[in-house]
Image: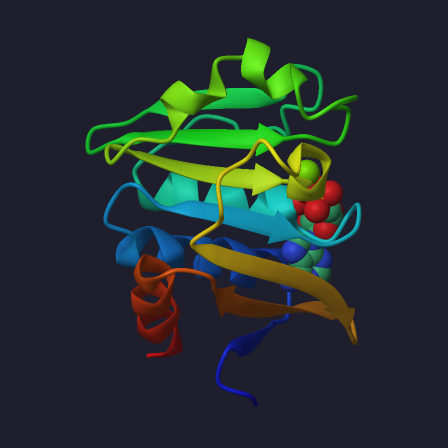
Length: 153
Ligand code: ADP
Ligand code: MG
């Protein structure tokens, strides 16, 4: 298994990986979730939110584009930009205010917001492998490198 990648056999393992991600972030991270429809991006996001103690439901915010979760330690902004027509619409959502040291931004379909979204600290890519998925991760910043190293352990 290559070092920046893991096989996740099922939905439970995907949630568990999200937990792991929640354990290694410090606040202020931007994570892009790449991968086709049905790859498990929202499932992984649910895992992150569970990791921070959120017990309620987590749905892909396809129509609202972003769902904020105000948790004990920080705020998680979960984006799904699938239906975003133009990256500039993000400006109207006031998204610049979302990227702070006290928030984590998880972004599905980040390519739709290209040019307006900040650089991601970590890119996650999910693809099909056998009956499960493979997650590959790639740091883009110094902060992301720390995350990527911790995810390997
Ligand atoms: P996305 O947000 O990428 O469109 P979802 O998180 O909604 O995808 O997941 C789509 C489906 O994939 C769900 O039925 C979920 O149970 C399933 N799934 C998630 N992770 C895995 C996995 N590691 N292996 C197999 N199925 C998975
Ligand atoms: Mg989704």
